[in-house]
Image 1: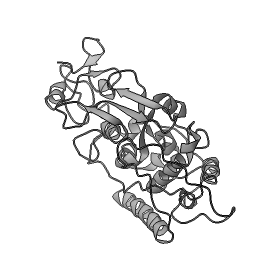
Image 2: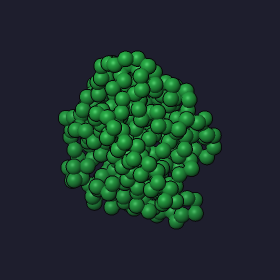
Image 3: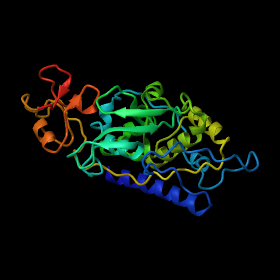
Image 4: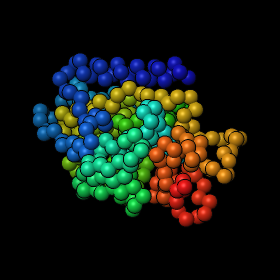
Length: 313
């Protein structure tokens, strides 16, 4: 199993290295860009039509993807990709807050959380072009989108992976963006053949990131998806394939959802599945909580008094 992951990782490295060495198209649009980066503009369309794509471009990388039909969705659930927002990189902060800190501007951080928990901020949304205002625990206007949706990944190869690799994809910052919640939910598990961002000026950057993520993890594309991405990229033939880094596998057991046979937690402390802390008391001791129904963490704990808040005291 480890050898399969290693082979896929080095296949991706070799593909990206070949693209970078054989041409001058630079990698750009990394998910690790500075906080609050605006939507990546489409490069101007240049060069003659019907020529081979330039090395280092998203179009060139698209040509390396295998093309197959979608596998059945049998057995798919979000839990197949591990606990939501695990701290895969072990930086002491969950993935959701990592992405919010990267993508939002004007941040307010909760004291005592080692600059982890984002309380509020603003996002120039790449999908709609709107300015979004995020307030933790308030109305849900900002989601963290998987650019390659997990359902799409499941149907194009991920169902055959070991769980550690699925957790890596679900928490990969190169596959995550803070975006408008409504647009994200309209997208659902769609691929580029079925959904593209409403803001047309971001479509090239969007499909380029999908191609880079699929190449990184060895996911295939359907013929309709490949054609849809290709049509977008004809409008920006020099759009670079963004650098999305190497795969970071979770530590054994991290982010894995307990099975029914697992020992349940004490009903007097926590009935959730917090990937970092066993109890509300432990979470509060590290500066986390309280959580409301608008927070992902709410589902990790038992709301004993039914007031819509957990870990409040």
